[in-house]
Image 1 (cartoon, helix red, strand yellow):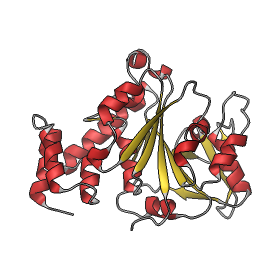
Image 2 (cartoon, one colour):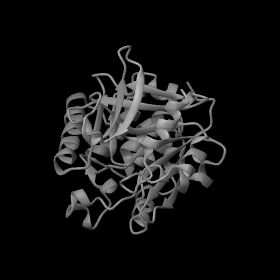
Image 3 (cartoon, one colour):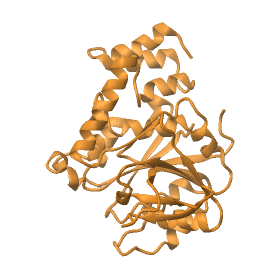
Length: 297
């Protein structure tokens, strides 16, 4: 179902990636490979699955040209991709301040450039969130170490009563993932957010305001879905291993913008064939070419 709401996407791909030094001393974390694709392909694909075609990618000044060289303007995937620079990483809520002129009067969706999602393909959670006319929608995922994240608290009736940032005593094991849908009011809310004790403009502050106004929908991701954070050496390796296992076992590609664009009708078979030719010497190109032979929509 095509969304009747105009919604633009933002991918936050800034920061120094210091937790992954020395790997990221010379390259942006979001340009590192996750098995057979650059990391940035995965959040782009998630936005595409939500029928979002206008995307702003926020990068550091030193990495901006590298992203542009890789992605261009997105037209090869039927997208309109623009870029902005984050001079200083002052918190996730800063994305809406940087992206204010891009979003204008539309609704928006923010996804973190180092977050990978899998399993949204076969349900309507993304489309429902994207079609929502008012308020915000966030996604919560059960983890073993919730104290590392923003955490959703529930009452005895399983109703959301709180969202806390990195609590010492979490009220649940459900962490807030790096995927956030908001209406246009988020621009003014983000503008008025005050720095936290950590000195950052926290996305949790935005979520708390929506929750206080009874305008926050928290969707729980089920056990058949995956949310992968790639902020450590181990999690980076685990994400690649996960993608490799899925692709090798099922003969599919996860986070493949070319395939998503083609299946949605944003590019035609001739354009897909041209894209596959660019990778004719490897399995990625062979997979794209195989789609043309299957003729499955």
